Length: 91
Image 1 (tube, rainbow, N blue to C red):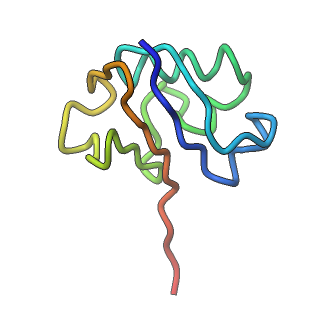
Image 2 (tube, rainbow, N blue to C red):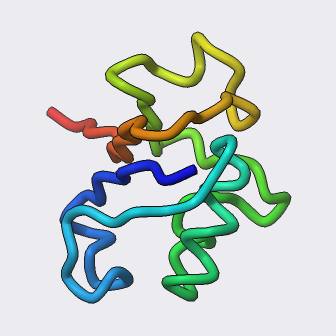
């Protein structure tokens, strides 16, 4: 099922400067695999060495934070919109 993925500016160098891409995925884990197959190198920016989502990268499915859903196992359906948002800190 096709989902729309919003790519933050710092990662657009991996998506050939595309701010939005389409992926076939049934979960966030599937989405990561699909993104990596289309855009090699992007997954290591989103996941740590153990394959877990990095703490400072937030994923939202239709504006819902996946940390309050099912994390990387969060199910996706046709037409969902996934936003990848790097955390911003500083002072």
